[in-house]
Amino acid sequence: MSATTTVTAKSESYEYYYHENTWDNKRRVLVGADALDTFSAIPLVDVGRIFSENIEERKAVAEEIANVCKKVGFMYIRNHGISQELIDRVYNLSRRFHAQPKEIKQECYAHNNQELRGWNEHFVQTPQGPVPKKGSFVYSYDPDNDPVLPQLTPEQRAMCLGTFNQWPSRPVGFRDTMLLYQRELLTFSRRLMHAFALGLGCEETYFDEYVTAPFVSIILQHYLPTYPDAEDLDSLGAHTDYETFTILNQDAVGGLEVLNRNGVYVPVPHIPGTFVVNIGDFLERISNDTFVSTVHRVRNATSRERYSFPFFFSFNMDADMGVIPSCASESNPPKYGTRNLYKFTKEMRERAKESHQTGVKNGVDAN
Ligand SMILES: O=C(O)CCC(=O)C(=O)O
Ligand SMILES: [Fe+2]
Figure 1 (cartoon, protein in one colour):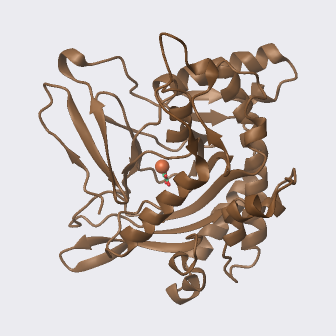
Figure 2 (figure 1 turned 120 degrees about the horizontal axis):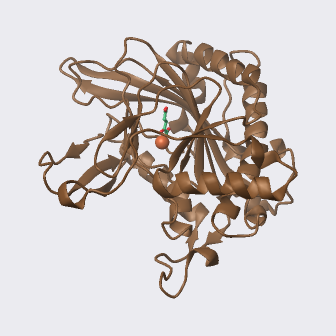
């Protein structure tokens, strides 16, 4: 259950607790005399210059991006180059997929799949009993669908979760469109990684060898309106994303909120033509906390159904990654050791399987 509890005394700083699957987390919220400069709106960055031929322009936009990643961890991006026509097609197919009867969606039920790829449904407790609040369809990196085909050993290939993807037979064209969207976002993400590398003081190509067959998952989210008498008003409980970064497209319904350092949830309304990009725990960790992975949640307080699709991007599954050398120094030694991405994400999926046994689920998926 997503039991999000906030201590209400606001005159002193406090720990904000949030719950993700079976994992408890907390953030220190700074108020009163401890209050720090924080954000009250999500910045918008024009990322068009990441495609520039001119390195000075690429460095300038990388610095702008890095400044937002250090303070906020969330930004809108525009001029990303992904076609609106393709985005609209993904929405259209997602709506048609989720509108189908449960028996059809259950053909690709995630909990019948060893790696939890496919469709899943989440519930909330009400006085009348549990009712559905969210449906999600998850699919992952398929090495055969990469525009730059990777050379993989059988072991590396078996780690690519997309080899476990389950596809519905309907609507027609669903699989092809979702795989095209994955290809487009993969190419864009590798370019964005160059900007993150520059912004962290590395060579532009520093991460290239770690993203040849990266961890990628896309979730087609479908949020029902919240029930006023539900035990929990979160459509998606407060959490941080655990990957490197997320590129989210959301419809115009709204409801995404981001927690600032002073404990205020800042709304992230829809801005046409933009994606929302946020930093995940893995990049926070290897950047030695230079970039921040920020808590967020979704509350669909409208009477409309809400659709969104986050694209989660991280490194190759067999990557063992520690703190990036440029992010540590004698006065700022590495705070974290090396972590293996496959082992880490496997643990997250095992936790999601465990929480499934408890029946009513908090709505956070095993990406
Ligand atoms: O649907 C949204 O707006 C956000 C989704 C999200 O935060 C997630 O799936 O991790
Ligand atoms: Fe998220």
